[in-house]
Length: 205
Image 1 (cartoon, rainbow, N blue to C red):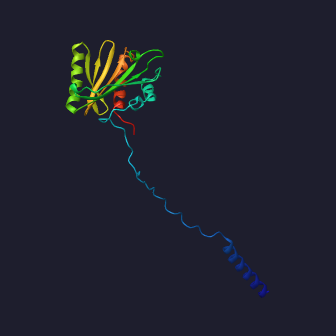
Image 2 (cartoon, one colour):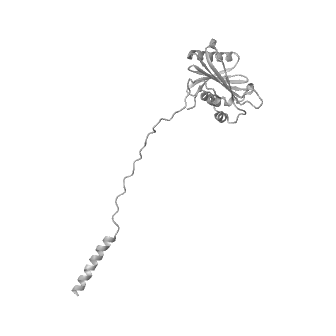
């Protein structure tokens, strides 16, 4: 009997040991949370800016048609046409282009809805003087004159009876955006003309 009791006791101990062996191993602690690593961009983003630019030879490099339509909120008819002007040493002008947008089919340049002109001059003072003379001529003709922001630059809104202009200069360059035949309503001039003027002086990146 003693032997049997001893055997049972040993069996119980063995079972306990085996149970301990077959149990799940203690779990290790979870690793600490990873701290996100922020890597700065390798190149800085380029933001287009108005510059004293060289005259382009394509209206798509002045104001692209898609941007023109998006700014106006409607699609203009026809394709833009470019007229390259001549140099005029007598007034210090070294180059000139005009882009005509929104010419209906079978119509000509005078029927354009928007005209954007860029000119270059021999120096900054000459460019500013040409703009000032244009503003004064329009003022004496009865136009309303208002200084407005064009990007980080300044421009002048000239409101005539049938045409409104936004003019300005930057370095040796001048810009003018014309709203022909009162195409853009008066209440929308300030939301549209400065955008087109800024783009006209902003080369593609």
